[in-house]
Length: 176
Image (tube, rainbow, N blue to C red):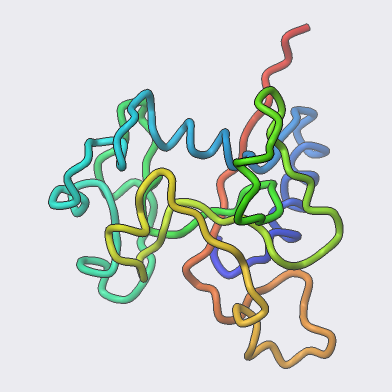
């Protein structure tokens, strides 16, 4: 799914949770980066050399100006596909450029509230260069992502100009 707002992705998680009886949600930025790194501390889960990005990611140099069906490149060490490139992914967090410096270490969730902007997106996309695919790279959603939306007010559900954004869900484990 591409071009949806963070609000739509969050509502999908609520629907999926109600439908299955299991808890699904968007990952926090910290969870997303942990999964993307897959136990490494390098720029990418496969190392620090951007020359090998094409083996793991669809990005500006090889995507043909479009997203691709997931799983077409190598997974990271934990078997997760498309953590770098293809589509950038929504997180549950509001974007704050300085948040990591002031976030609590034990629970870094940054509640986005009801605001449409800005929300944190991770992973880079098919429209980005290799540097924007790093595990630590982050960006903020903007109103420009919906500039061609003909609705007034703008849709809560779609970003007409953000076909480079999608989402993945986290399934919470019941430890009881």
